[in-house]
Length: 87
Image 1 (tube, rainbow, N blue to C red):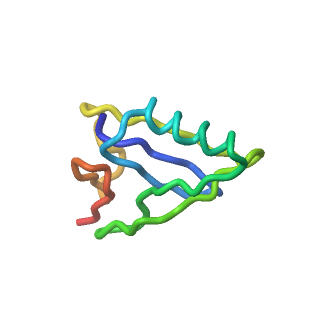
Image 2 (cartoon, helix red, strand yellow):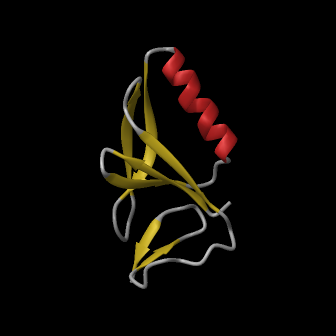
């Protein structure tokens, strides 16, 4: 998998180097404990580690991006670890 895109709070984040199942398990385990800080990538060019507070009732979408998926924007590219890169 190229990366997993995440829609949260009207913004776009990503996670690289993990499987969808692994990420889902982390989120479900965190929710079972009440809340959980999920580390994601944010930023253009050089990504910044960011943390999303996961809790019940907060909408979150996971969008798996397969290795062979074409990029949808001419300005955006992703490296092998799921970091967004702008040229």
